Length: 307
Image 1 (cartoon, helix red, strand yellow):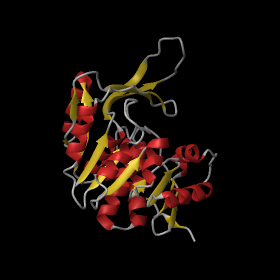
Image 2 (cartoon, helix red, strand yellow; image 1 turned 60 degrees about the vertical axis):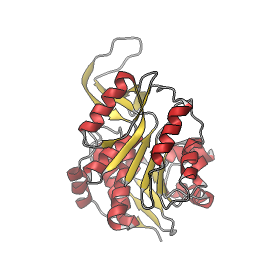
Image 3 (cartoon, rainbow, N blue to C red; image 1 turned 180 degrees about the vertical axis):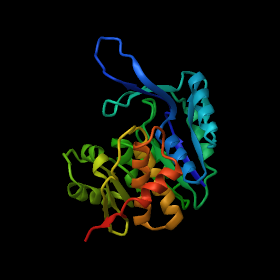
């Protein structure tokens, strides 16, 4: 069974504008509302690819009720924990302005509710896969992902972590199956400037020396690099297409890799599905459908293995 955890789910209000001026009233030309949060996005694309998962996390207030209603409406199994105070955040995404967004804080998570999540995670068994993705509210320690993996470390579970800075660095020593920093996040970790596929390789290998098994570095329009636990390096350029909405494309890549790995246990094929899933979402108004991903895979070459 696959489980995803989203500590800070959101309502994503995605807005299109013809122009934006500070200090003025700006009117949108098009808008849509989606359930947000990296783990929820992973569950959505997994569902579109034919894989069931259970979405876990915390919800609060009327906005939380709306998020749950939307996720349920996608046919995804949910087991969210309801908080008694606050409200789930609303994120505003300006789709025409190169990833410009305003993200809310999210509610406070009391210790008792956090322990409730740990209890739910106790049901995981050997062979399950757990995705820990996204930011956390300020009330939680940066070790929270590490704490979860440590609790389950005696079981044969595959851990996938998509997070930034300390949230990610703290889990690397726990040998996660997959981590997926983007090129800017990788640079932040090691305090360097990176701009090519070749430049990321020494730092990916450092992450593996620290404990990570497989590492994907996403590079937006420049594609991605995968370094496997077997030492193989794969590169793939991003498929050609018109960028429509970049929200959730990285999460789609994670979901595609997971689906491809579970189907084939072949890293190259999993990487190919991951790249095509991320790009298909970027070329779509919504997160990519299974048909869109399959079509893109058929129209693109497989990743190149470096010598």
